[in-house]
Image (cartoon, rainbow over all chains, first blue to last red; front, side):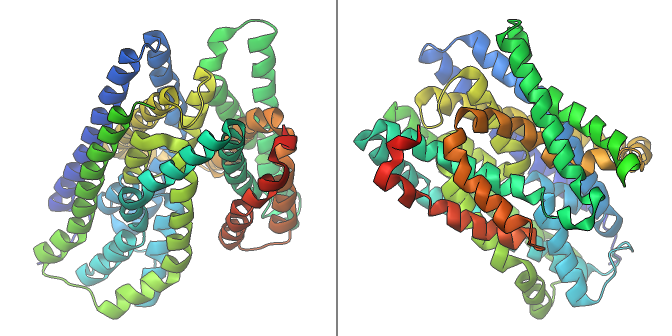
Amino acid sequence: MSFDPNSSFLFILAAIVIAFVVAQSVFFLMRAYRHGAAIGMDKAQLKKTILSTAVFTIAPAVSILLGILTLSKFLGIPLPWIRLSVVGAITYELPAATSTATALGLSLADTITDAKAYTAIAWVMTLGIIPGMIMIPLFLKKIQGGIMKIKNKDGKWGDLFMTSLFLGMISAFLGMVFTDVRNGLAGWIPIFVLLFSALIMGVCGILIKVCKMKWLETYALSISMILSMVFAVIITPLIG
Amino acid sequence: MNTTYNDKSHFYGRIWILTALFMLLSVPVVICLYYGAWPEGTAVLKGLLGVAPIFWTVAVIEVFTYGPMLGTGGSYLAFVTGNITNIKAPAALNAMENAQVKPGSEEGEVISTLAIATSSIVTTLVIAVGVLLLSVLTPVLNSPVLKPAFDNILPALFGGLAVVYISKNWKLSLTPLIFLLLFYIPASNSRQIQFLLYIILAGRRVDFSGGGKDYV
């Protein structure tokens, strides 16, 4: 059988997987909303959470779409679409495809035509990202139990522990911004963008607190992200 | 926390995530069967060796880091829908911050799950629309003018998010930020350094056992 990485069969397979992901999301969304209302949480707050998250998600989702476009030149649309809708992230999928293509002596610049090479890449992309899906059902309850024990023993320490986990995570990712600083001024662009984003968020914070612009809370992160992306578009040609 | 709701979240979450795992593994099996093309084991092994050691380790660390932060429903959902670092975790943490609820609380569980579910649905919709309008969107998305915007999406996102948390917990932030500068600036392989940093930050637990309360 001739092989086409954009065949109808692969698109149907992608549609089934994506429908499953949407179904799971809708299930948990409705469950959380009903439970929030049942325990007396303000329904307006719940709706505000949904709206602000929806707005915030659009720009990063477009960057995922870009990831699919990048991979589609080599792998067609359906496989990257599946992989980036279930567990995947472009930071994993691209190295996984590159690693297997290199092992098979293929170039990522040409559309894949060999079914065996395609399935090898599909397996590597799949097997590389399953540990999280195995570990969560096995250990999540135990991890939460451990956190609860810490909190029950010393509530303040428990909160500190959670905050430090997040600060650790955010520092790890902030650090990635610094990896190109030795490549001249162009390597500093991500740092300038990061600082600009922090500045815009700070201005939003002042507007919310001092000018009582409470509505801005919902969109502050989205605004700082979008304006910083615009800032990157402006400064890159000037510096790079 | 309401144990009944949380226990049920674990029950439903396990069913969903294990079904997703089965489905995920079925995808390459079905493709192999349909095309009658099973790959060479050595090709898969070689490809996997290039990425698995670091990504499997990072996955383990992510489970322990994000699990408590995202809550029960949020974790079962985020670990299926993926893109945790660049979308799901920031979405959940920003939503909890705006709603003034804490991760791990019952209200935090609700808000985090709502945020992660919403961002999963919106991401899927954006991608679906993008794929349908591919011929129209490709030149726009691939334009050199917009490239820097998407190249810098993570600093654009984390700058805004970090300033909120660091300003509120600046004393607690000092150690990881110092390590960040010490390790990242001289480094060339960010992924390996990120992994190393995770270990160090996990080790921060030790810091608190002696005088954690002094940090706030």
